[in-house]
Image (cartoon, rainbow, N blue to C red; front, side, top):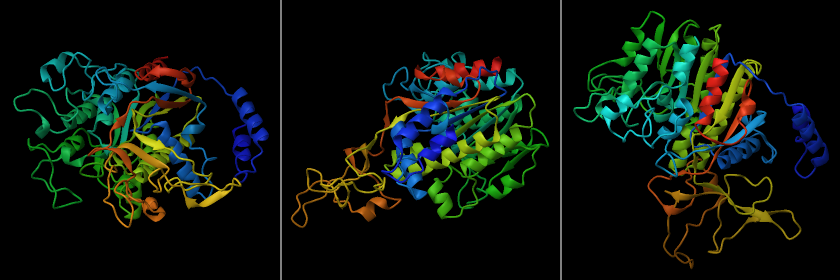
Length: 488
């Protein structure tokens, strides 16, 4: 019945047979199958910062890039049969940070902002308290049930979300030894990744953050004018290779694609975060997409007859939002959806639980009265008096055009002086300017970095136990659904 739904939506804007579409959707809903489990495999997708506004705008942008009006489009993860919502607050924050939210999802415990896999009693930065407050994660569940483990991220592998799979820290900033406060007896996050590879069946770890694994005296393999970040002189990439003859490291897409299917691979593709998808493709960089990394991970993990757990993070959706650049946020969300598509095509819903969610939202707003098919990145153009699309930009109360997408706060909050008879105020934005990939959307409250939002985020799921992820849930509930699926 999914085919009938898609067919109904292929009509031109305004010509859709809405009755046929509605009845096809109802038939598909009636035929929706509940799969009780157990799950052989669990794949958790987290798009950092991807609230519903972001996914809606990404859906429209993807549809417009494909030549449609956009609104009728559907992203792959939006077609998963079961949906719900997660409340994202931290135990001490109404609007959360990624460390606390990722800890909730991967350990089953809500906790403070800024800490990784320690309970809510541990003060941020308290090394000693963190030792007794450590929380076990889904990593241990996968190991206990003899499954292989993988982690993929477009951010640094030591960043909050991917680190929440394998590390514990009283401060998310302790990514390398140089970040540790003087005199504390705690291990940095990069070192804990190597520990996890030694003690767990961690088969694949792909992402950015190479500097945190290399000594400060070691030149970066891609950027010779840069060096590593470690002050303890440890080469953790060499440490990975030293675990066994099957443990290999790669730093480019070319090397990744040449790796043997039996290798256990640590891929570190940038000194810090990986490139935004727009920049990766524009520069034709020798760097894998998130879809390619996901495919690589599933191919390797699928060799385990007992199954696997895989975490995939689209980390840079969040970073683009922080900089007030909606275009890169949306194109990274579309790239993230391509990774979900790869996973749905490579796995069987009868034995693989796929969960797609976000850790938190942002302050992006989808507003005004643009006509259907208006470029989602452009200025608002409404309707004529006859109800037809207008070619003229709408004017706000200050007699200036405005874009469909904006932010409640961020770098785009600017005031221009009075010019050409116009009073001082919001900058006058032209269509070409708004459509530029580098454009930073206008914002209300000036901030150096746009902030997270406190709204609920969506959960999309398919496979054994997916039907438990409906309604409005505490974010840590996601962990217990995954644990149940793995232990059945």
